[in-house]
Length: 107
Image 1 (cartoon, rainbow, N blue to C red):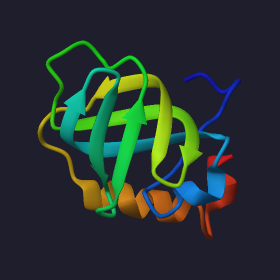
Image 2: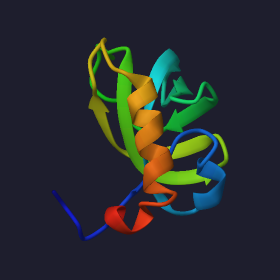
Image 3: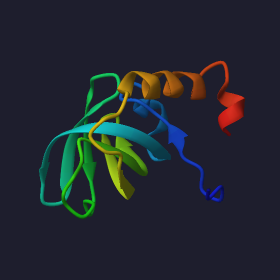
């Protein structure tokens, strides 16, 4: 794991705290176009991811690491297909822990 440039675990609601910073999230793909993917965050908010999309075919769930450009947009640096079966609830709880009481464990 590369620790030289850490990224913060976020869901849709937490992104606004980290605008201009490196974040990591998982989205459920809703649609895609040339240069962007629209997805639903693990807390059911819409996120637009811009940048070179991963090689098709896209799976239902994608992990995205990149710079939060706004409260609902990320400029992707890394895309990872997470498959078609994923538990968004567990990831959402991880985001809450990583930004709350146990934040010190994720730095």
